Amino acid sequence: MHQLFRDPVARILLLAALVIRLSFAFEVTRNRLDLSANPQLDVTFLHENAKEIASGDLRLTEPVLGNYRDIREKIYGPERYDRLFRPGTYVDSPGYLYFAALFEAVSGGSPYAVIFAQLVLDVLGCALVYLIALRVYGIAEARLALAAGALCLELVGHAGFVLRESFIAFLVTATVAAFVTGQRDPTPRAWVVAGLLWGAGWTTKLTFALLLPFVPFVAPRKRLAAFALGAALSIAPFVARNVSLGVRPLEMSATSLQVLAHRNMAGYRGYGEWVGQHDRIRSVLDAADGSWLGESSAGVLAAAIEGHERGGYVKQLGAKLFWFFAPVDFYNNISVACLRLASPVLAVCVVWWGVLSPFALLGFLAALRRREALPLVAAFATLGIGTALLSGVYTRYRVPIEPVACVFFASAVVEAARRIRARRPSGFAIVALALALRIGTEQPGPDKVHAAAWVSGTFPEQPRDYLLGRLR
Image: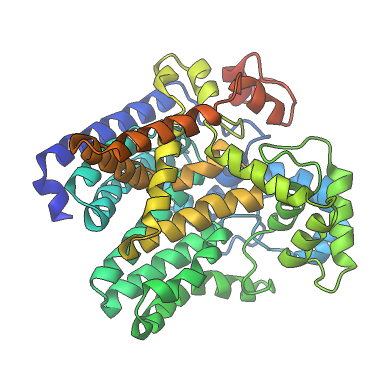
């Protein structure tokens, strides 16, 4: 970290990141935009469960379903839900719930302490982006990656509410930083820390499991035990809690099966919600129940794929990949467009992904040839592209990978600049290709796209009142 504070440019950029995030926090607080009064949003479920833990129920013996009650009643059905998930099963993201509960306890139940903590944590994430880029590439890439991270206002927007995506983004960034450090200095301590961070990530976002196949290629063989020890220490409290309540030891989410069914069955467009498909989701779950894989994640995914016409699933994957890189503001819990309408100060928020994504893709492809960039490649491939292919595309699903995208963005831009300075045509080719990708993924009327993806089927005419739960 001392390299960061010795760099005057980095200090200025980090200060700018802090000012942007604190300004956002004060604006959200001043306008009381915590969203916890809106029963249709995840904020309510997360806030209520965090309050339960903060009040002393550390095992969260009776998780609050909140807006997920509809999933139990209308998608799984009570009989199936109760058969698959025993009482006490975490609804989703237990790692985040305990993080939020810590600040709920300190603040006496106010959601704004969590919001301030997330925004400060996001600044630390910017610092980690700088260090990752410095160690893998160089000082120019590190400074540009830090500048890009400071301007990731979609990430800032999600950190400004009791939503888990910014916390996941920090865990992704910290895990990548730990992997990069472990590559350069493969001490047991470094890999125990890497395991601890990976375990914290897995208890918050189950797709962290997709990183595991890459670990043997990043960590020296003699350090795999240290990584496993760190992961076990991180996960152990959750396993002990589950065992004490009669829940399966590694059961961390009661919502993943319906997501796999919904976002992979025939007809899903690759982005956003798909309204009024409860019966079709249940039919996928029924098909999985009758297969040899049963109602497991693999069984549900296989049943969803089998429902496609020939070549249909491949086309769906292509659509998901397209929408992942497209600069569209998909409405889900919160959106940049909604922030603009909710508060004049928040109108500065932009869909920064449209700037990052084409260069990030080129940087990712170039990094495939760099051994030292493997942690970045693994994270982007699994927690970015892999998550999109399994779970569809929302703005908030892209948020956790944006810090890693900032590093790839910086690497591609700096490489293009160096080649242009050296009067090599390939530098102009990189810029031209990035512009072609940007234009090729541009979509008219993004508000219409994300409005159609929202459960109501229409974008709220009074977004501020809607967000605050005043519209019924």
